[in-house]
Amino acid sequence: MTAVEKTTGEIRIVERTDAAEVVSEERPALSSSGADVAPVPGHDGGKVRDGEETPLIRFVGVEKRYDNGVVAVRNLDLEVRRGEILVLIGPSGCGKTTTLRMTNRLVEPTEGTILFDGEDISGFDPEELRRRMGYVIQGIGLFPHMSVFENVAVVPRLKGMKGAPLRDTVERSLALVGLPAEEYARKWPRELSGGQQQRVGVARALAGDPEVILMDEPFGSLDPLTRESLQDELLKLQQALGKTVLFVTHDIAEAMKMGNRIAVLRAGELVQVGDPLSLLTAPADSFVHDFVGASNPLSKFAFMKVERVRLLTQGLPTVRIGETFAEVRKAVTSTSLIFARNPFAYVLDYAGRLLGFVDAGASRDPSMRVGPFLRRATSVSRNATIHDALLIMVTLGILNVPVLGEDGSFLGVLTFRNLNSYIWEQGEAS
Amino acid sequence: MFLGVATPRFILQFLLEHLWLVGVACGIAFPLALILGIWVTRPASREGHVARYVTQFVFLGQAVPSLAVIGLVMAVLGTGEATAIFALTIYSLVPMVRNVVEGLRSVDTAVLDAAKGIGMAPLGVLVRVELPLALPVIFAGLRTAVVITIGTAALSSQVGGGGLGRMIFTGLSMMDTGLILSGAVPTALLAIFADKALGLVERRLRGSW
Image 1 (tube, chains in turn blue, green):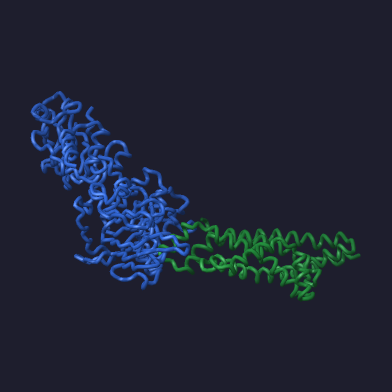
Image 2 (cartoon, one colour):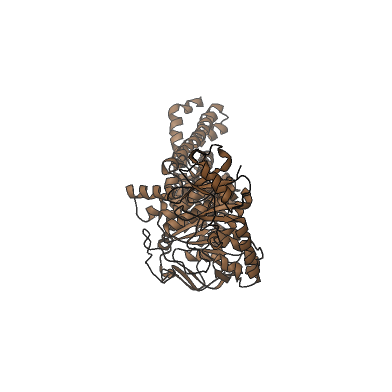
C-alpha cells in the first residue's frame, strides 16, 4: 500500500494527529527577506489605516528600574507594527514580561516613552488603555464565579455594550476560538479543560475588539498537543482578523512558529529583532546564535517555503477523473517518478486540481474507470515550509509529495531527490 | 419555686435581648471588618506599616479570652448595655477581619492580574471579582464570629448586658438546674440556628459556581 493517502483541501494533514499539527499553514506575513509587514486595512473596529507608517506601539528609550535597584528593562527601542505578531523572547529575568506589562500600564516605566498609535500612553486613563488592548496570560485567570458567557462579556460590558449586541459579540468571540456558544456559554470555567479555558481566555481578549492583543506565555501551561493546536488557531485567527499581537514566550520553537518578527532580550536589553529566518541566518551574536539554535542545520528550513525547491512537473503519472485504468497503466510505465512502493497515478479533475490518487494495481480491468478507486493523497501547500514537507516525507516514508497552489491546483511534485539536492546546495552555499 | 422564672414568656424576652446584643454587635462589627479587611489588602496600604500593625493587632486579639475583653471594657466604660455591646463588637471583629483578609488574599493572583489587565477599575475588581471570590471565607468568619458572640453575650449579662446569660448566671448562683438549662438550651439552639441560617444566606449569595 502506498503511504500517499488522505487529505485534500487547504491544509494537508497526515495520518497521525500530532504530525498534522506540525504541518503549518501558509503565513503570508512571514517573508524570508524580512520585508515590512503590510498593515491590514480596516478590520472591524480597529483604527488601522491603509498605508499608515506609524507603528501601533513604539518603545522609545524605555527603562524599568525597581526600587531595589534591579533594572528589568534597559533603554528599549522597539516597534510593534500593525498586523504583525511580534514575539518577545529571552531567558527568564530578561525583561520580556515587564516590557509587556508596561505596554498596558500594569507596570510603569521609570524612563522613556511608550507610544500607542502615536500617543504617549502615560496620557491615557489606564483602564481605558487596557480595554483597547486584549490581555491573555499563562495563568488564564478566568473568573471562576462567572459563566463562560459572563467572562467573555466583561470587556464589552465595560465598554458600555448590552442586550442583543452584547450577546452577538460574545457569541462571535466564542465562535472564533472554536467554542460554539450554545454548547459553552452557560458552562462554568471549572467544567472546561485547560485548553478550552485558554480558548475562553482568548475569546475574552477578542470580545472587546482590541487594537492589539498582549499575550504573556499564553500557552505555557498547556500540554504540548493542546499548545500546538492553540498556536495554529491563533495564527489562523490573527490572519483572519489582522490583529496586532505582542507575544511573550521563553520557548524558541513557539517564537519561531508564531512570530512575524522576534525580539530577543537578554538581561533587560534588546539584543536583536528580526524575522525568524534572519535570526537563524544572521544572528547578532553568539547568544542569539545559541538561543535560536542556529547551529542546527535543519532549523532554517522551517522558514523556507517549498516553492523554493524545483518541483518535478514533467513526466508525472497523472490521469483525469473520468479516465480508465488503461491510462493509469500508461502513466505509470512512462513516468520519471520513482515510487517508494506500489506504482500509482495522481487523479486530477478537469480544472487541474488534485483529487487524490489510484493504485495502479487496484483494478485488473483496463476499461474500469478510476473514480471508485480514488484515494485521498497527502499533499503540501506551496507555502508549506521545507521543514514540514521533509517531516511529512520522512514520517510517511514517501519519496514524493504533490504541491498545490492556494486554489488546489496541482503544481507538481516535490521529490525527495530534488529536496535533497536543494538542501545540499544550501549547505554548500553557507 | 424559681422554675416559675423560666416560663416561655421570660425565655422569649431574654432571647430577644440576647439577639439584640448579638445583632447590634455583629451589625457594627461586620461592616467595620469589611472596611478594615479591604483596606489592609489594598496594594497601596500593603506596602505601608500601618496595615501590618492593624492585622497583627487583630490577629493577636484572637488569643485574648472573651471574659478578659469584657472586663477590660467594663474597667473603662462601667457596666450597662453599652459596655456589653462594645465588648461584643470588639471581640467579634477579630474572626471577621481575619477571614476578610484571608479571603481577599486567597483570590488567585492570575484572576486579579487578568481582571486588572483587561481594564476593570480597582473598585470593579473589588466588587465584581475579589469580594464574590472571597465570599465563602468571609462568611465562614462571619459564622464563627456570630456563634462566638452568642456565647460571649451570655457572659456579658455579668456587666449588665442582659440576655439569656441572666438566667444561666442566676441559675448558677442559686444552683437551679432548671433555670440554668432554660438559659443554656436556648443559647445553644440560637447558636446552631444562626450558623445554619447564615449558611443558607451564603449559599444564596454565592450562586451555583
